[in-house]
Length: 156
Image: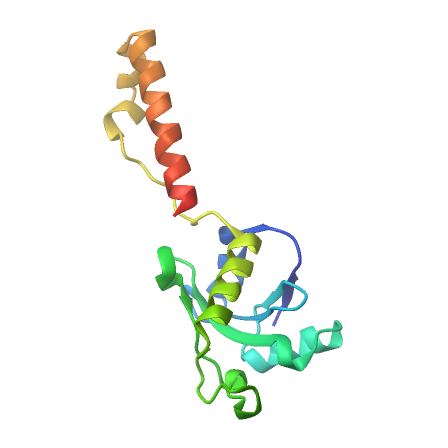
């Protein structure tokens, strides 16, 4: 079992390799909202929690999530972990009850995990060689369109 502590941005595809050996497209992770780091790859959230505590995190800053690496938008982060049950902090469920805290966790994950892990083939005909028959103006228009599409996908 490899637990990765993510301190700087990483690609979603890099995390997918951790998930494949365990839960398929789902990866357990623990986010430290104080230090803005995340541990991933443990069999249990408590494994990642222990790694972060050993790394200097505070217990009250650690929140367990599941990442569904093939999903997009808000659906790819699930707030569900036994380590989240903390009546003394006002959290009485396995989820994260505070909407502001959920937003902070989403923000941290978005800053640490980049890309959506998908390869899109939208213009199959162009990819098969038809693009060589287009004029320079048509090629430039297609490139501009694809850049805009990539930017919108990245921001999603």
